[in-house]
Image (tube, rainbow, N blue to C red; front, side, top):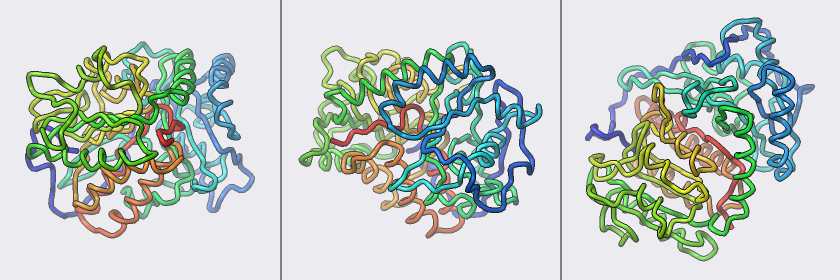
Length: 440
């Protein structure tokens, strides 16, 4: 939710705003397509695969190896799929620097612009880290960058995101005016639901495929662990998580609900304090009631940690993530600021959780802001309970949430209020396996 050290909760007044496209440079230098792939209408003769996977391969041997390592995973999905080697995008760009937009433009020219729908979902997997230091391991394959956006005064936030990869129909993501606004990217009708698999070497894909199979079969898959760290007043996020706990304990939803709060609100199973225990120690303890499943945090956050006690104590950080047993596979949903934000030369919390025990991480690359009570309930309660109420995969549920939030809160507001809602959607990314589910 909110960043430590900002008691205002970053609630800012209405005003003009501006998001401009920035450059994100990957490990491989290739460049921005100009108008070569710009099509005035749809691409009916393009590839209509249900799943497109962009692989970080610059040579044929690596491309074949990466495809083979993904076969066990793909066999479980039963989707039509197409592999795209990065070498094809490099060739199309004629030596110019690689940007996220150059990747999108290549996909735009090759694939149909079919909208992603509940009836026939469509997915895009970016199989690469966004930066060379993202995984914390030596990078043996190229990176594929995210889009870099900037929200100008009065917000002044620069952040990266994968979300514009979801859209092929727009000739540009900014409508040609340098600003990315809600009319440029209609989140109700993306072409793809996008996810990123950050790897440092092809062999990491074996771990990815193995985890998908293990989590899908796990007895704890539908467990729910709820973390609460107060952000402004004692027990405020515990009250939010209490709503989730009460809902998830209804028949046929979560198999087990485990509450780890920093207040006595809602009678937590474990209460964290500045002197201990922390959420990290509880998740890692050998005798813990946590076995895996869904982990949802509502708290302050930073690129390296989530916090408790109004941001004054660390609840789980990069070091703590490494202590969680790797067989306690989980989906980590962090409703906190910056957990997937950049840390120069080091992993952020999203990457650390993914590398250690999380099959998927849903988190933000910048500040997320509680704008109104109904939008808070939509983002922090309805979206969580919906994961158990609908037998859909994580990507489909994220798509449903974005559509609802975009329709109810982005399109119905203006000025600075709209900007905050818009940033809340643009900044959230899915790292890891988007095809898992916690619904029974």
